[in-house]
Length: 219
Image (tube, rainbow, N blue to C red):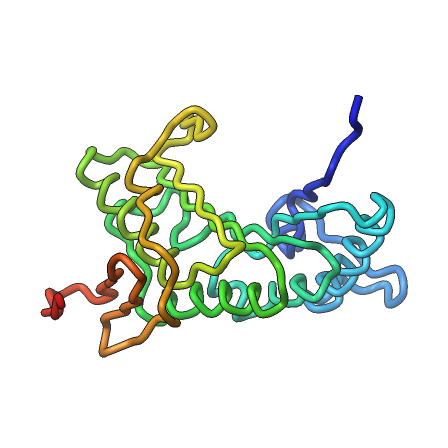
């Protein structure tokens, strides 16, 4: 066979510090429970070792979690030699209320995460999951919203996976509105109040982060 051209390390991050197990890992150097920063720093060393072990081939990791998590501490993982990072809770918790949309601040944190990953020359995958009962209209609203936010922060190596149910198989499902060709971005997004806008060669993307209606100018 042709071997392999890359690898992905799953479940990187600080969830093991109290979420995945009944106990918590102890730092053998201090004999104390790991701090979040020390744990993530050691995981950076793990990712660097993995990158070297596969001969420098493409390495991705799942551990960015979300924009708020990146702002708090998961940005430490972005310092690793890995080529790509996954935010598995991009914009929402899978089982949150179908009407629970992120605030403007949380949106900005998600966009800042995308921008920071691009600045480091790393690919970014945002994974938006809707694993609760929802109507087709509610699913369409979430799909449009996640696509809009993604396009606001998209770079040449940004990707989005929208998962409308726990059992959805996105390898065989085509979402036509996810492949619309807007052309190249004409610059970064801008913010006016709660409205985020980015212009492209063949269109414009606008996302309203508030809970009230806003007016936009279509040129």
